[in-house]
Length: 242
Image: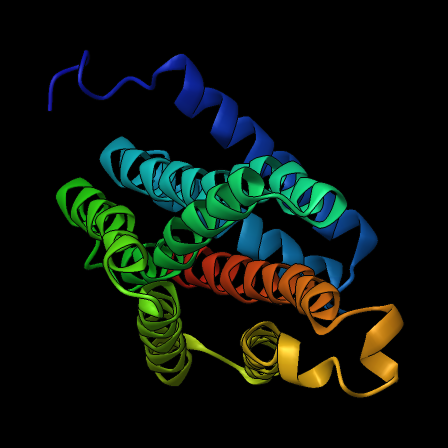
């Protein structure tokens, strides 16, 4: 390996320094109840492994960067979707309702993209294809009366299937709890949304409609899905460091 190829870029150096700072912080705080000697041994092993092998550090750097990208895209989807969602509730007009539905499908499709990344199967082509298919599936809502509901159910079932798959392979008790809460919130979102008119006959849903409560479940499923996927991403990074 040449001297040029063995050098680190500025971003990779920043990552290494930040990671070393975290290690030192863990040593000082001793959160995992390890002795100072054991913690220092972990730190020395980290340095001894990565110093002579910059290529390995580059791979880890890119993995963490890709994980950050998956997380940030999902977070930006939530940020941009929130005003659309609450505008629909405030004005109760067709345009925000259509935009709300159009946003919903690609957000659900991003969950399998993130999970495929965690399982080492995701590529840019796969992510682009899945998101494009998700956007085009809204054509069902234009063609058929219950087309959106059919497309939404397909998105939900595929996301839940991939979630269970990655939980069985990489999950733990903490991620299992997040997965259950995310699925329950998702079920509440779908059921309350579809049964909105039927639920209106009950006094509980006359002042605050089932559609409103479905939006509350929507926020909760966003939160728990985010917790589930970020926890799995962090665990995957920790496994790669061992």
